[in-house]
Length: 353
Image 1 (cartoon, one colour):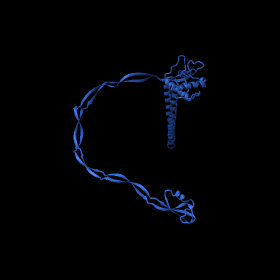
Image 2: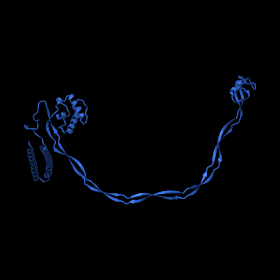
Image 3: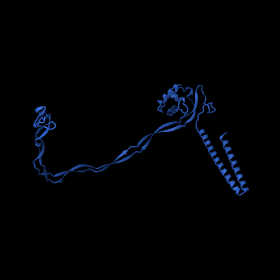
């Protein structure tokens, strides 16, 4: 059924529905007043629903018309002898075909344009000054009283730390209770035990221990102290006058202006113009029978070198391989599709299946 017939049928059905609704509304008005108003409202509601449905069908009809006009405007070359675009023209045995997208063709042109016209620039030459110096008095000469600190020297002296004393200490032998007994070991044992100390007397206590009265010599220590050598004094010193050199600038040449010619600036502009739109055309594609693991692996390895999304070389024709083939075709301006790979892409990769 053509688009014109569909339009006529929809218009006829709409007219009949509107006419019937109007007649029913008129009959209801003549029958009774109160029930007629309710029935009229119901009829109006149904009429509004039908009008909405009619508008929806009008929109669908307009969309169909736009798609038809778009399909007519697309350039699709048809080879001689071909009566329908639903089948590939002149197919050859053993080859597979698909309607692939032929990319749009573009032409690049280059031209030179004036980016900035010629002009003139005015530069201000600033005034030039020569440096000049002048010596001025900042502070006159004067005198200042300076304190000379006292001088000290360190002196080391040997002083008594602990005086000589005697002390009873336990000896090495055991006595028999007699006063002054040395006990076992004799005087030599006492000397060994109290080396460096003189034993003045010995005695044996009630427990049998020998107690020795030992003379402990005095001990001395060295101390260091500061001794005044020269007391603190004051002296008067002369403070010389202070001068400062002031730098000034002397005008040598006044300011002036300089005019500089500016040449025009040109730019090379490269523009791309579309010479033909993309269109669909029957082209040979890679057949499923040729999609062996070995062939697919070779195809994947070649596509990975083409600069698109790399795919795993596993010998399986998957979505990644199809995307990589479509990316490579778009880069090279070759026919492409979403569910197939054209033989032109295979040949461009240097493969023969």
